[in-house]
Amino acid sequence: MPTSFSYAQLAERFRQLDEFLLQHQALWRPRPFTHLHLPWEAELPELASWLRGRSLEDAEAAHNQPAQLQAPAPFPQLAAQATALSCMDELPTSSPLAPDARQSVDVPGRKWQQIQAFGAALRFSETPQHWLDWCAGKGHLGRQLASRGGGLTCLEWDKALVTAGTQLSQKLGVVATHCQQDVMTDSVSSQLDPTMTPVALHACGDLHVRLIDLSIAQHCRQLALAPCCYNRIQSDRYLPLSSLARQSALELTRDDLGLPLSETVTAGARERRQRDQSMAWRLGFDLLQRELRGSDRYLPTPSLPNSWLKKSFAHYCRDLAALKELPEPPQQDWEALEKRGWQRLAEVRNLELLRGLFRRPLEIWLLLDRALLLAENGYTIRLGTFCPAELTPRNLMLIAEFEHPSAST
Ligand SMILES: C[S@@+](CC[C@H](N)C(=O)[O-])C[C@H]1O[C@@H](n2cnc3c(N)ncnc32)[C@H](O)[C@@H]1O
Image (cartoon, rainbow, N blue to C red; front, side, top):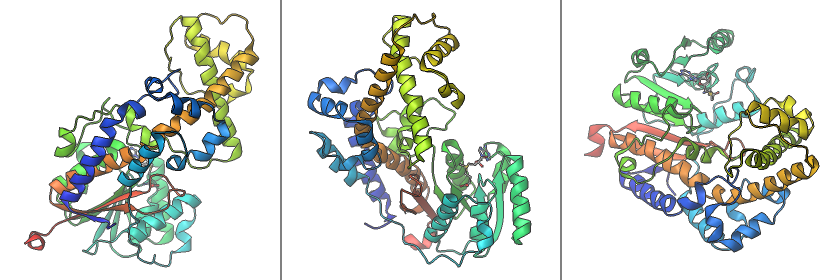
């Protein structure tokens, strides 16, 4: 599959994904974590009881590749459709410049590999004159790109990162301007002009949308981004960007926008154990709070410091009930309740595998909305993966170049 997309190809893929997501929203919208029973289970009892019968280890093994699970119908059919609709090729890569090993100092290993991969997949028809690293952190990406030539400005609002970035650039002899800048404010517009090539690696929801809007408004000729955290937005609901998405009946809440991010990369055994315990205890507490409140509804609880997991489960429940201003829990078989929490965790994780089929389709729907907006504004679009998912599940990249009027005649 090519990585260059015409407007018609983008629109066609968007329409197919839109239809798929709309048709099956009853399967991916409700979150197993917050429901004792999911509405779709009554219609698909065989699939539901098959998933509920599996262990936590089974769920863990299938988490990153849910489409490969041999589950009862309609799971395989949905998996095949989801896989076909979310197929994205690897972007062609140029052999990376021999990296300056000194640049990798102070960059976590995985991040350095992502930066290298982003750089290798980045190719523009016009040689960039000036790189603009958007939400740059310490500017590792920008420095790596500027080593090919071109000036560099890094925008970042965290003063400590700006200072550390400035020092690193000086130490490495890279001429760069690190600006402390909130990219959501009006003053950022003056940082973009047609000679700039903005790049954004993993800028969250509103931040990369802001970059796209401003690049269009300021006539930047080319830009590239790898989006992440689609749910980090100010509004409660997703505000579609392109005219096609604005016409879609698909309405997305901030919760829905979290679905593409629900894939976790392999965590260490200790981290995993802690995450599992935290979720099992929450699910156990959820059963208790339903009784205490006499209401069969999920009650959101705040994230808690890890030290809470060192308490006994009974202590944890009593403290969490107090924090949520619930009546004091009566004495009970805490061991049995904790066990039910762990049992629910296994069921939740396995039921999540069905939602997992829609993770990538929704992510690509969102990516295409960004691509379509740029295409509507005269940009040609390349889309694809820039690194394997094991390096980061947010491995999709959009490269946009303003089409020279003579090129289309
Ligand atoms: C996920 S990090 C990505 C950093 C870098 N691009 C990378 O890949 O290592 C997002 C960065 O955006 C910065 N940021 C968040 N909100 C911002 C804002 N309103 N203006 C500028 N930077 C912002 C954060 O401080 C953080 O450094």
